[in-house]
Image (cartoon, rainbow, N blue to C red; front, side, top):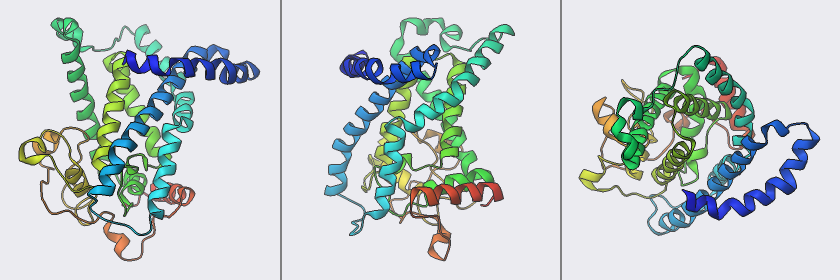
Length: 314
């Protein structure tokens, strides 16, 4: 992680000192200088990871795609979502919204003698096992992300937002960030609250998020392969997650879908939501086959998602 920070530090410092800091002085925001500086670093890391993901995954999509599209117009809107999220526009909005709230929460917790439950305090031997500690945190975060994803499908108002993600008929490496802004707010709040409660170090938290983003981009990629009978039950594969997006299976049945895990299919196996079918379905939502419109452009999709959330529409 330090190696990556060393790569971006010169550009991060130049941008902050020559562009961001003067603007902060103008609006009397210098009290947030340290936090904004860190946000800029996170943005550069996000852009760097996006570049790596594109260079690794786009050739795979061109080489062994599940589907070949003559018109990639539907994919382009997902590129907009990704650029908004990874370029820092939305992360900065999230920071400005949530940082005061969670700073207040941490202060209130300390005043009430409520402290973070760190794994290292429960298992002191983890202090000398940094890698093992990190793995434990990854597993915990992935479990709670599985729970969050189940709720996105279970509660009708939340599905009203999440359906925008599922309405993509041309699933690709760009589709991971295709989310309603309110849904992204909830996700950021969910993970940040979990990080506060666990007291996870900022560096480890960022690595976990970047790792999850990498696997999520891979799992949305327009390729039809899994990792074999054994490894496909260890790590989420493109086929495993494509089934989650499949018409007729992605939001159907007793559990309102299947294959909810982000990293580890073990959660789906334990809770009975795993589907290891080798049949690769078309993606989308069943009612798209009739007359329901989920929007073609970014603004239209955001408006439709908001209206569906207000109506609590499943």
